[in-house]
Image 1: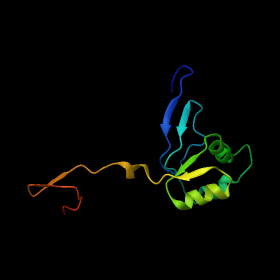
Image 2: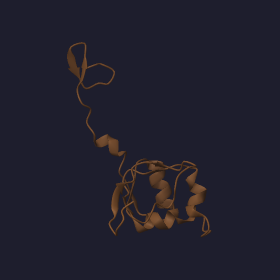
Image 3: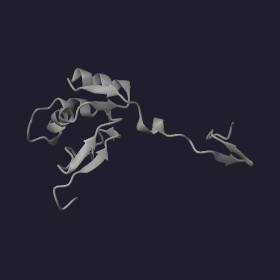
Image 4: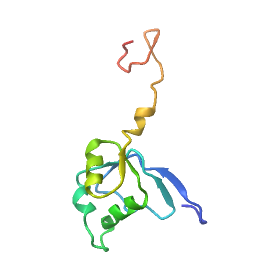
Length: 115
C-alpha cells in the first residue's frame, strides 16, 4: 500500500468470483479492466443493492471503470445484460508467444514436443 496519494495501476485480468475474493479493491488500486471473467457465483451478488454487502459495489465499481474487457463471451453477455459497457478482449495470455522448447536436440514451439 502506498503511503501517499499515489495510485497502483493493476491489470484485472483474472477469474473473479471465488469465495475469498476481496471486493471492492482498495481505493489506491486503479484497475485496468482487461480480460476479466466473472464467475456465475457472482451473478446474483452483482445485482444486490444492500450497501452493507461489499459485493453490492461490484456493478457500480465496474461501471466507474468502463469499458470492461471480457475474456469470454458469457461474461461479455452478462455485462451487457447488466448495463455495463464491455468489449470482448479474450484472455490476455493469448497475446503471449510460446518460446522455443528444446526437445530431442531440436527447437519446437509445440509444448507437446511436435513441430
